[in-house]
Image 1 (tube, rainbow, N blue to C red):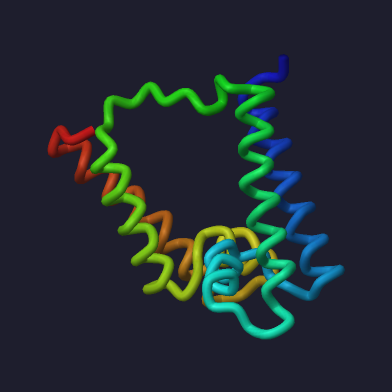
Image 2 (cartoon, rainbow, N blue to C red; image 1 turned 180 degrees about the vertical axis):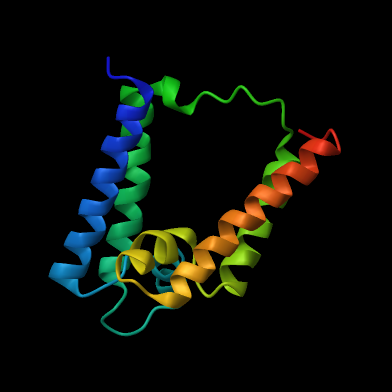
Length: 140
C-alpha cells in the first residue's frame, strides 16, 4: 500500500488531469459551484453536461464507498449541527468569493488568474484563522 503522501499526489494529478481535459475538450472551467449553479438555474443547451458531471461526482463517491469504505470513516467528535453550519458558511463564502476553491484554486491559479490567486490566498488564510479561533475556544 502506498504511503499517505502518494495517495494525495495521485489525487492531485487526477484532479489536474480532469480539469485540463475539461478545459481542452469543452472549453469550460471545472468550478463545482458554477456547475451546480447551472444545474439548478439551467440555460437552454447548457444543462445536460452539468447534470452528467454532477451525477458522475456522486456515482464516483458511491463507488468509492463500496470499494474502500474506510475512506469515509469519521473519527471527529463533531455534531451534525456544526457540519450544517460549516456547509452553509462555505456556501456563503462561495457566493461572496464568486466561486469555490476548485474553480479558483485549481483552475484559476493554473490559468494564472490574478483574481483567483488572491481569492485562493484569502480562502486558505480565512480557513487557517477560523480553525485557530475555533480550536482556541475549545470547540474542536
